[in-house]
Image 1 (tube, rainbow, N blue to C red):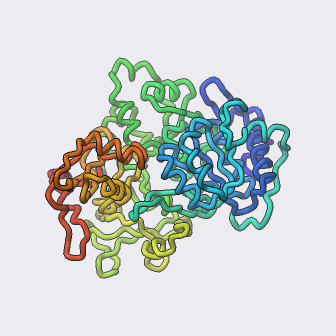
Image 2: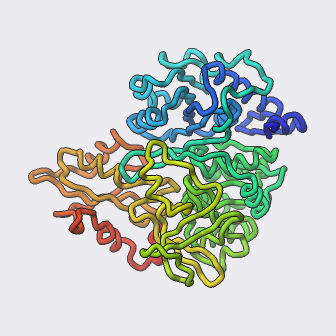
Image 3: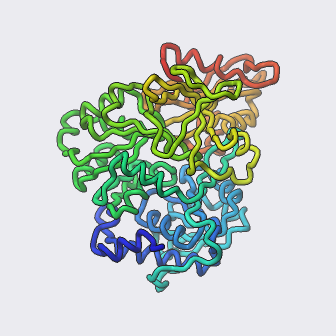
Length: 515
């Protein structure tokens, strides 16, 4: 079967595949770049199923490496460039990575991993000159120069073709690898037809490509022969400029970037033409209805789609533009090829409208495993139904509403944050005896990380001191923004923290607990 990128390079070699600031790369050149990288990976011993980690902000090189890993038969493992060195080292080691490719900006983040993870055979830096490469790595462009530009042949069996592994935080405090096989073409086709993607689409990378959502929707456009506009660092007015300049038709965004866009002064907003936008995908965290209303007011009512999904379960529901204003709070109906089941505490399916239950999904695109965490995987299933722990209900028309999220998970600015890993750091602080972490409302981020802490007798640490301690062990977006000091963390008889009693006062008067 011909590689889709190779097919576009042969059919439309001069069409622009990637735009990054003043850099424009046509399909012929982009495919050749990806092939050189793929041949390098194969030359480094990568065979089908080898784990290859890549890390870096959005860039042309990242796009080419994503393709190269696929062509080499590798299992690509995106690494969040915002993780602390400690977290990054854990992911690289846990993934059993053989090769790590990284933007040289991330060298300080990965230096610890390079010293501690002996199983990695090759570290390759990009977006730099050879002299800028750290001593423990090689230079990607130098190593790939002169490699063949013809289509590579992946070594080994092709059972792993199209497999990826995204790391998502786990409730035990450590990230876990979500293993996903190649997507089902019929389900992808159903998604494409429902949303209406076209070969001439222009996709703007509003979100980071290490996140499964922005990457997956970017790949749809790319595999249909569209153009990808790379936004390396988000600023709201630059977003407007790029949409206007390149006639962007589609993007995928968490609520925070779009909130910053629609919050711009009217005189700024009015300078740019956004009429090209046709398919703006709202996800990563629920868009509040007020944000949707403001988007519709400023951009229009025909381009906003919302999807509900997860790294584990893929895209599960779609809310169409015509339903955005008439179905506030809904994430839509099941996507093509997806079955949604709501289960009660007795394990029976709930069929009545407006009755909440645990949301399960049955489809051919749910994840295959949590890497090295079989028990967690088994705990997420009922037969061939899978869940990530969300609670939802349906209305009379079959529209799904997420009424609460996994009781502990926080979604802040589109990032999934699990309190357990933060609590583990807080309780290691010498001045803290106990801690409970949860999300509280934030107009800017949807939810903000908040901690209730029990201070040891005689101690009185400042909030800033606790935050600095956390910064040594956690990514910046996981650090608590505010604190309560309480005498005791409430727990039930089995010892489980009664987080709802801590969290609910902050959410009084709101219909949803999801930001």
